[in-house]
Amino acid sequence: MVRDDRKYHIGFSRQDLGEDPPSDAILCGDPERTRMIATEFPGVELIRPLSENRGLSSFLVRIPGGRKIVCATSGMGAPSLSIVVNELVSVGISRIVRVGTTGSIQDHVRAGSIVITRAALCRQGAALDIAPPEYPAAADLFLTMALVRAAQELGVDWHLGITASVDTFFEGQERTRTSANPHLLRHLTGITDEYRKLNILNFEMECGTLLKMAGVYGFSAGCVCAVIDDRTTGEDIDLDIKAGAERDAARVALKALERDEPTCMQ
Ligand code: URA
Image 1 (cartoon, helix red, strand yellow):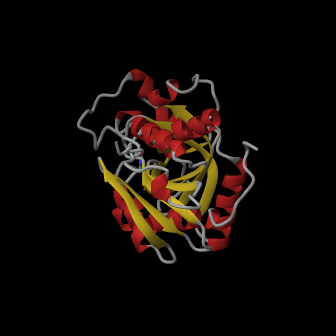
Image 2: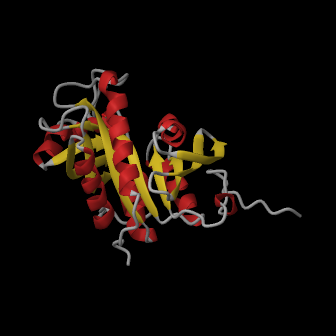
């Protein structure tokens, strides 16, 4: 009998990573962003596609500086991310940088900049299956500092702070004008202003669960997101600046992964 060790959802196995397998991964919500980083990014060499399963494309690549990494797709939201991250850890990944997109809720964090998360307010159902609600969603200190250093060296417009990770793009982020559902539950009415006053910088949908998983499973994780809308002024995504900000977030992640760093788990 031929054994198939490929993981059911990500569609590849530890053996598929070859000799000298990588321990680092970049994880994007959007498969198109994953593909762009793996196949079109200056200085990134595609070693081979790993899988294309349920829209979760994965690639093995060599990044500037020579290290091998996996570029993988989490899909949208925490339930999908939790499955992908579990399987990535099973195939030997121990350092993950999420490269995502986000909406700013602070005036000084403008669309076109990037946010590096140092900790997340995690209002996500999937995380409750992994850790108690009080469990910290904290980014790895060393990886986060590597992301900050990379942003400084690359001269991109960056911010460092606390991110709100929620389960829904519309209701959970207090969208009513662009939502098919104009009604908000009472506990979500005013949530953006409340979070703004708590010095939270941005809304997104994956990082809190990733950071809690990192603490529980014992891997290191960080998050850098392209700011694609200003929720202080409206609800619309700024498509004109999206591509540039996504590239900046990817450049920062790739540069941060060029070197081995100590991790908070050592
Ligand atoms: N992703 C989100 O979750 N919210 C935004 O506003 C933009 C991207």
